Length: 196
Image (tube, rainbow, N blue to C red; front, side, top):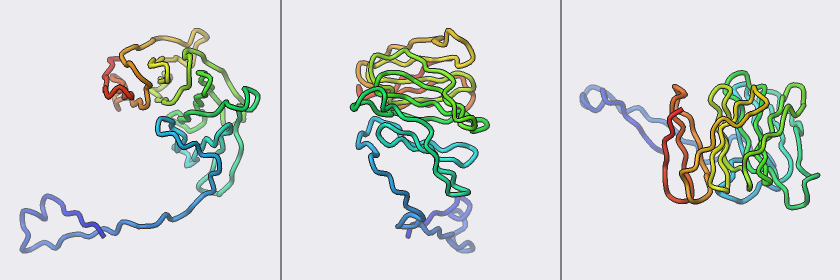
């Protein structure tokens, strides 16, 4: 059991009791996830603001609705060969209706989940896309090719920026809350900050 104390309780120890918080030692639920790839650089889970968990299991993306327990298959990449796999997933922040899916072939797909329809496939990488991050209508993808591509998903010519600052695989991307800075982390042990 771990305990935490607020700043005010530390100031006046004699009159305030420490507030305890129980940290569970076991999960509240376990979902079967065969074919969950064992690769640190892949981002295979993403939770939407509509309480749906996207899970990439090898060649297939599944959606688990936390409220109903329903499981749906969204897409797969079986037609791309036996070595093809999903390498990243990321929900758009607002509305939970669109999911970005990165693949081992270097493509990023955009799916309308409600319609169960692929809206587009965007290129830009020569190897797998392991990291994705949304900033409103801009989707940033990071790949094993050391590049970051900013895609404007609203327009046909989607590539609005290619960012080259890493010498090894990009494995993490995150936009700042104000949407003005993109942070990228890579296997080259660099954390880069990019102005929008």
